[in-house]
Image (cartoon, rainbow, N blue to C red; front, side, top):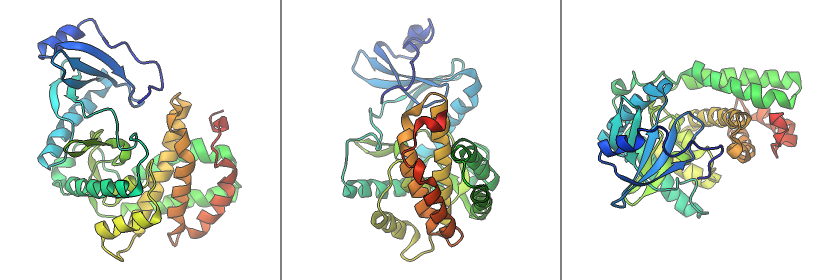
Length: 330
């Protein structure tokens, strides 16, 4: 993974070498890694014995995230979900050393056939089921509920950073705003289950023992179809035949799809706002995903009774933006 911005030096403080030694990690090399856009920093620690681990350093304002990652690791391991093992977690320094699962997520692997992707989706759905089956009481206090209000707030960023700069006709923009209101209210009526929150191919890592799940500190209660919608509608977009086959297996042949599709619409439009916000902050790596994500969201919207007509009008209105130029960032 290539960094998007200058990385901090490998030794982020003078005491790092002694800290590593105190935790039985004698480093032969320490290499900074590109990561997400949070203030966390990462480095790959290679030991003199050839072992490899990931050092994550958290700033003080993310002390809660540090603790949640530790707790969600324990919960998911108990549920039989493969996650990076924690070698050491030092609350005083907010440093954590975790298992190095390898350099590539599913998303970053070389081009693969759809049959290979389908097998991975099936494995991921098994993992999803284990997460969803966690006792709700163990998850409730980890993070705020992903309810209709939270979902609607996420879409406000998309309206502000993506939709309004395109200067849609006022009546069409008003209809989209009203649709978002109705959409999130409908999703809020779904049963709530434990949810990874970002269960998608960029957070799944192939290992010798199967798929592993990363970035799981946002585990919370959420609408029951949210994780499934994230898996099939973020970054990689399986064709309809594969999507329907997976839905038949998870939901049942011929089972209603509307709850899933509503979550997919929310997720895709939310992602568009997130990608645009990242780019405005100097991290443009995900901008090429905006156009296919928009197309996927409109395709899912078109299959909802309440969204079909609007999806057609939006597709025509958004056509000039399909290339998603940097003018959106001006």
